[in-house]
Length: 526
Image (cartoon, rainbow, N blue to C red):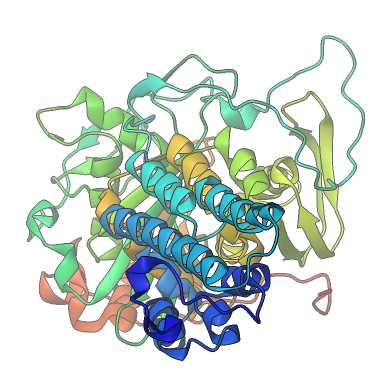
């Protein structure tokens, strides 16, 4: 029989003139190349076509969807498992092409068998290493990590919060002063309840004209995510009623791609409740950052206490229902930053907080204007320091860090480490995102550009006002809900609950003022 017409399953078209080892090496580079070298064009096409078609489909998706959006699809556990199976089959097909090309060529001495054996071993090892992007093990590790997404515990109620293991991030941090003398404070006052924190009460107030708990947030054309930063302790152990010291709503228009950020100050008080009534009353000034923990004490009013109740309340005040919420505690924030290789931010204003307490006992945080690549602990100081500026400046920096984290996670150099990053996120984040819809979260993150369409911090005097002098010695603010209603209608239009359901308070919205520029240290340093 003519060797050039032997069936493929017999293992080879033997070509005495060309080396099987060279053919194996070429097929190791891409299936079918070795057979093309042996001039077996039909066999080359058989081995190359499936892999080329798969790569072509991925390239087409990359061009039409973009890298971030295509990558987001692999955060669906079902898709990821299918990708793991496909990757394993491709590896087997690749190995078969390699061995078949070697057998079809001139094999020479018996030692030539070590060439295909070594190459097949390389393929096998690559497919089982979880840090090799797009390998079967990489996809499988990612799918397993996704199943653990979210801690399953709401720290605003109570849960065990393990302390993250200290690691050397390898990222240069900004020098800070030496630790305070022995006996000095070792934890920031920001991490504890104020000693004079009054018990919360609910006073009579407006009755809502709609029930926000029954509104489907998926149908308004907006993706609204509430991001919470919690003041949990970093020493581990039981955490009860952790305060929500950072509250940011990220709203992305699903059609236009416009993105807005809204920061709610932790010191807001006397606001109307989505269940009716007002949070606080005469001589009683409970703050918004304690609301989630308080809801546990009133199951008669808040059947979904904790972060779900806070999401309803924030959506009620902003006039747009919240699709999802996600919270991260201050212990895990540095770990996440270090996991993505640090973040780069432009600090526009001098920060000089002599009372900032680091977790290792160092005292004081100073940062001049300029661009910095921050490790986790430095980014935490940047996000939490307020005594050298204000709560409102801190809220702006938190919005800035949110964009910086998004940029770092989507950086190409983090592709190989996605399973580890997702595992870290899953251990420190509590969210109501369904695991099979995580791609929506990443799609939203991809929409949050470094320069969002609009960023708002609801601070006095534009968006809130302070109680009259002498009424309280507490640092609290009261939202100007007529101005908030005007902003909500201006941005969300017919989707605003102020527009379709009537004003949250019994007032008419006013025109939205133009925010005054924040005091500047001069031209942007970055």
